Structure formats: C-alpha cells, structure tokens
Image (tube, rainbow, N blue to C red; front, side):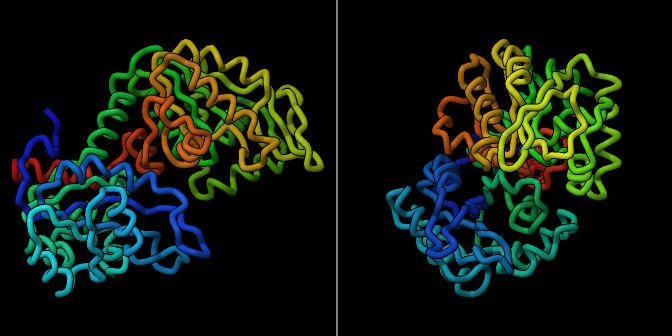
Length: 411
C-alpha cells in the first residue's frame, strides 16, 4: 500500500478542491506568449478526473524580481483552450476576492488564482516545518473554504512552501495523476529496476549526479554507470587523469562550496565501483572555434572540453543497447553549440533504438528530447528537473512528506 493517498482513494465530486500544479513555463520575453505548454498539458489527466468538482488552481510563474514573473491570467486562458471549458482567472491569491469567488463556485467550475509567489509567505517560509506551513495565513484562509487538497506539482515537490507542503496537516490531501505517475516510474528506477540497468549521468550538476550514483550503488541496483559531460570530466580527474587548469577550474568554480564533498563522492565511486564505470576514452575540445578530437591519454589540455568522442560512444553503446532499463540525466556535451551536440544526440539515438525502458530525468535532457520529437519514443520523460534529481538521490521531498502526513491523519 502507498504511503500517501491518490485520486483513486476518494470521490471528490461536488467538493471544493485546491489543486497545486507547476505550470511554470518558458515565455517569449517580448510578448509573454508561451514557448512551451508541456507542463500545462501534463496536468490534464488530473483536471479531467476532477471534472465534477469545484477546482481551484494554485500555481506560480517564475519568482519576484525576474522578467517573466507574471500573473496567471495567460495560463488560465491557455488552460481554457486545452481543456475545452472555461477556466476563470481570479486576480487574487487568498484575499476576500479569492475567497468570495471560491464560495460562489458551482460543481464543474474551475478557478485559477493569481501567482502564489506574489504572496510573501510562499517565498519567505522555505525553512519552516510542516506544522508552521499549515499555520500560515495562505493555507488557513484557503483551507477554510475548501474540502480537499491535491498536489500535482511534481516539478517543485522538492520545494518547501505553504502551497506545496502546508495543506497536509489541515486538509485531506491527495497525489494528482501526474505526481503519482512520476513517483511510480522513478520509484521503480530506484528500488527495483529491470536489469541490466544502465545510468547515464551528464550535464554540469556534478554534485546532484554523484548523489544519484552513490544512492543507486549503495542500493546495489545499478549495473553500468556512464559519466559524460562535465560529470565525465570530473570522474576522469578523480581516476587520476589531469584535465588541465581551465577544465579543472571550471569544475571547481561550478561546484563552489560543494566541491570537497563531490570530490569525495567521486573518489569513493572510483575506489569501490570502478568495475561499473564506463569512463570516456576520447573527447572533443574547442580550438579557435573548431571541434578537435582528443584522446584521454593525451590529457591535460589548455582548451575547454565540450564533448565526448566517437570512441567513447562506441564504448558505451552496448551498455545502452543491452540494457532493460536506462536512466539518463544530463547532456554529454555543450550541445547548445552545434559542433558539440554530436555526443548528446548520439546518446539520444542509442536510447531511442534500444529496447530498454528509457527514463529521461527532465531538465535540459528532457527539453532536448522534446525538441527532437522523441518524447513518444522513450518510456518516461520526467516533468521535473531538480525534483527528479532530488528523488533519485533519495533526498527529502517536502511535498511527499506532507502527503504522507495527511494520509496518516485523514486516511
């Protein structure tokens, strides 16, 4: 039995339901038009399930001080189009305008409250306990006119704020369809993945990637770890290969105060699990705006390392093709520069060609999969970058803790 309740556990017809979603989306800086509506589409199953409820949507767009910090009016308009029903925008979060509108709802109505990050408590209570969040003004006011709460905001489930993790102590709370699917799929990748299980870790967030690697290695569930991108460079360095001052400095500067801890993790993996590592054997550097191949044995280099090479791709391809499950998080290259996109695109091609169940860890990797029209060719493309990383690393997820607490209290 799950430790939290889902929409399958309740009939919320005719109930007033607060639904926290994450529809934070890239906007055109000049027109504020949506550049990608994937997150709005992802919550459609939950909203359709609640079709006979009185639904009050809570969400944010960006954060105060940023150029794309906007009201949720355009989100409500687009939601109306996607759902084929009216979604009324309310220019208030928890004041009398919002409360009056909620009290006046009929079955089947849907309201979209304004940007919750425009209310100070949403950004001021990051370190608050679940009880303190439950006592916040925004939670108390909205709970007073509601019957239940649904969390479907997986992309910010690792955040601690009143609308994410504050309702579990005051209202029966349920996981939405999106967050349920994310937790079920990612949970299988952590606890009982099909074997052989190959994990590809790239990008520049070395500390997050190595947290995932250590978690999976300690659980004994992973067969192959393929470090690429900056993560691959760090693992080469930890294995005794000098990268050159510029490349080593880039890693240190990027990690900042997390460098020592991350370096220790890298060394632990090399010392204890070298047999599971498939380290790069060749790379690509940038010399006078050109891509130049470089063997690992010819390191160090004064030029920036921006991609893996053909030899590395040939070395790691069998681990992808022969796997029954593949988890990929983080690009293998500086793929925004077209001449260095090769490694990342070829890994995607291998994932698509493989018979494995492929899980994409969201973030930049997920965006690439969407851009290249491969979303329907992988098993699961997570909607949450940082949240996905946090879950895979086995770290605290305040939204899930709140759902679990609510299940204990209201089951």
